[in-house]
Length: 464
Picture 1: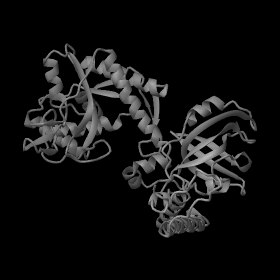
Picture 2: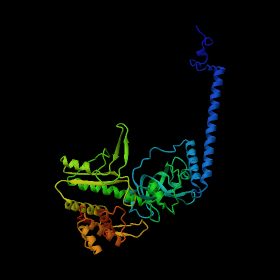
Picture 3: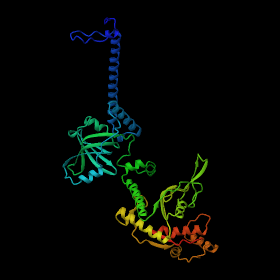
Picture 4: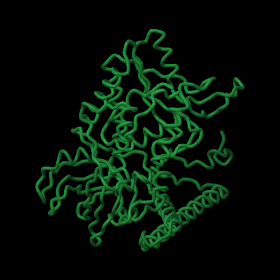
């Protein structure tokens, strides 16, 4: 029979058969190993505690300085320090989920009739961007929460707080521009402003870059156009442009679809550029080792489809023209082209008038639209899209406006010279070559197009 002293396993294992027997001690090397592990664990815990404390102190020191007084680099460094402090405390810096159960727009619509000073008792979970932060002492913080173009006030009071972290820490981590989640009761403040009275607020995504100051906004047009996301954050009215564009495209699709038109997609890259007179962009197809042209218009393919038996087709898509840029021209633009068999340009004018006037009435609720041709701060103009639209003959209108009877043989040198003299008389610029076609186009712009306010068809363009 083997004794415990002769069996290494038995020598390191407490004997449990007799409850009165004392367990034997572990070997010295095992005790030393366990001691080393315990010491290492204690050192690691102490180091983590020290790092968390240092990160918290660094973040607290940074928070003492107003964001408005920092330069962009300092602001970003402070936000990085705050993120380090959050991670060091064992919390998730970027929570992957927040249980949103209502939009701000839905909350405004549902609870707008609540009386001032009243709480509904309904708990909602919202999320959005905190565009302003106002502290009223240590126990009350206000935010303006923006989501999808709508704003609601968040009125956070310490006595209502039930978050995972303490009230002061939670609000210290939130800055203007951050995406936050809010859970609380809906009600109205004593002043009658619809508000959320939260029991919990969570930082969902940190705004790492300083936003422009609220009182000045974002006015620099170059920055607005190059950083459209920043333009959308700072100028809520810009969202309307995106919404209107989406509504316009949706209405056109619906209008043409209801009248038997089939929407198609035609190639964006072509062997031969065609469909319009414009300089194309050139790209290269590596597999075929072939230069191709980005399309300048879908016209030719759409006409092929009509030839193939699709009597009514349309396409809404991008065109590319390697030309100049101004307020009415862009190298990349969206167009809508539609074709129908057994119709002429008079039918297309009727359809265009009906479609656009109906679209304006559907989107704006009226045929009259106010816009600012010189920018939002410029003078306002009004356009009336009510049908019927005015239709003018190009040549007859030029004659009426200039009080000159034109030679209708526009292919002759005499007619060209007459147009040239007319352009010179009224200081109408027309770069060389000063052909009859180019001169007529410039005279039309001067006498007709520049004076048009309401929608107008310019018809009967002469063939030269």
